[in-house]
Image 1 (cartoon, one colour):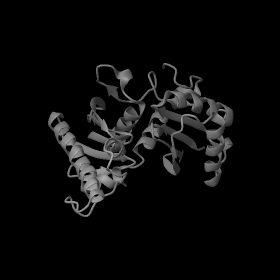
Image 2 (cartoon, helix red, strand yellow):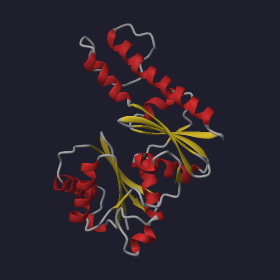
Image 3 (cartoon, one colour):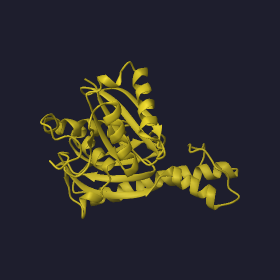
Image 4 (spheres, rainbow, N blue to C red):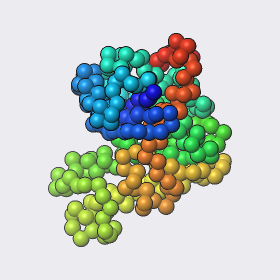
Length: 268
């Protein structure tokens, strides 16, 4: 039976459906905190139907969220439309990794999910670079320890801030320019944003590598990963569905507990 996985971010909501370990469909929605559970519920139902599925076929739901109001909205829609109490990633949910930071509860659920996905898939030390609203850099040891990381403004935020704060500069598309030496304002902005961001990524990753006590694989994910990665000197591979895979893995680590009647995000 299909498993629905949902990652609620500040800019986008990414969803996927797995049959066992095969991702059979995935979608990216704009995050809208004002939408109701009915609006999201109807829309998700239509997406599933477009893939040949129905809400009644979904066996279970697992959610990670960094937007608390929408966490509640998706809990309600899960119960109303799918008749399921979703597994919500948080304290008490089994992940299979040890979080070694000052306050584990401060770490975003998406970062933990990425760490689980990378550790389970690649079986080695990893740095995960997630290009979202913020760009996060997370270090996971080969022993399954989440060791912390860094958070930088996302490339879209950086570009938008430049447009808003400099009155004579236009809004631009985020794309690789043909040269770093721009011959006009737009190309100059594209060069500064794009190549500046590539250098930011490589700089942070190189410093994190020096602090790691082992060789690490650098995995990129998130909306702008495929744009930045080809120019990066430190990113080893792009895994666009890493977060969805991580959610699937976490679900199966908690499957027995849920079948025994301890669903949701309760302590286990």
